[in-house]
Structure formats: structure tokens, C-alpha cells
Length: 227
Image (cartoon, rainbow, N blue to C red; front, side, top):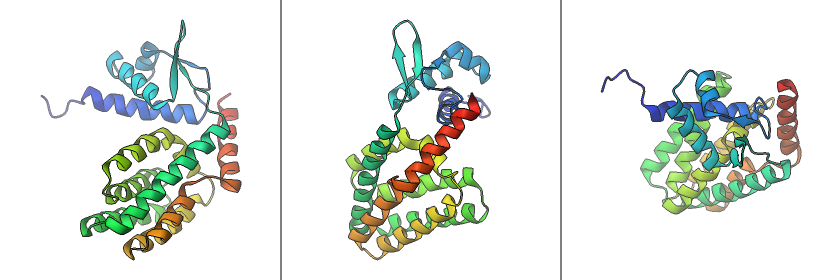
């Protein structure tokens, strides 16, 4: 195979991320129909990766298949989104607790490396880079839990909430605050303080009060801009 050729799976993954972004920013609103032929044309890809991207989006719950309409964008009420973040917070809190108790030296180094990469993106004020590196940071903590079932479940829900976590980081001053929270989480894990690590990561992930209001306001602003 030509080393310069892009694998269809890679195209499907990139297209899935692009469509996720369009959904969460309101460009594709709830009930909007997504057709593989139109997507392929819009993103200059063949129908195969477009079809695969739709299947991935359906599996993640972003879109649903309706009779006679095909794939349409699912409508996620704000209270449902809040519930999902609550569950995500509990899963990640468990990961942090186990990481503090079971993490190996290699696990600790991976967490520290991911944390330092986040620091650089934060200082550069690069929200897109910070979002990607923030994922690496959380994945490093999942892996340090040494519990594969927990890792798998956390990754599934993390993927479902991925675009909303991205949007949350666009709230003013959130990246700096996020990094400060990372710092406290890292210190607790390195100190082996399972209770503190769990509580800190839970508070970091859950969206409630002002943070949830900010997220909902951002979603509504994106939807109005797309109309």
C-alpha cells in the first residue's frame, strides 16, 4: 500500500469528529437528516467513510435511524446531558481512586507527561490543542486504574460526551481553571491519596450550578448562530 494513502478508517474517524462538532454547535440541529451521499460530497470523501462515520455516530448516540427518514440528529435535553456528566464524574472519580492506589511508576510518568503537555497548551492559549491533550490526561488516569472493565466503560461515555466537553472548554477562563484542577488531581494521585484524588476528579468533571448554566448557554448561543 502506498504510504501516502489515507486509510478509509482514518477518513471515517475524521469525518465523525467533524460531524460531531457540527452537531454540538448546532449546525446540524436536532431532527436534521444526515445522508451519506450529501456528507460525502460536503466533506469531499467517498461514500464508504461517510457510511462508516454515520454508523459510528449512531453507535455513540449522536444520531438515530428513523423509518422513512434515515439517520437524523438526536435531541439530547439539557437534563439528560447533566445526568450523563454525573455518571461520567463518578466513573472518573473511581479511576482516580484506583490510580492513586494501584498506579505504577510508568503510569505516574504517563500522567505527569500528559499534565505537562496540557500546561504548554494552556500557556499557549490554544483551546484545540488543550482539548486533545486534556483527553490524553484523562486517558492516562483511566489506564492507571489497572481495571480494564472500568477503562472501557469510561472511554465509551467519554466519547459520547466528547463534543460537549470540548464546548465546555470554550467558556471564558475555563482552560486555566481546568489546568489548576488537573494540578491538584495529579498531586493527590502522586501522593497516593485515593480519597482526595477521587473527590477532586469528580468535581473537575461534573457540570452543575454555574458551570452547567454556562454550558447550556454556550449550546443555545451556538444553535442561534447556526439558524
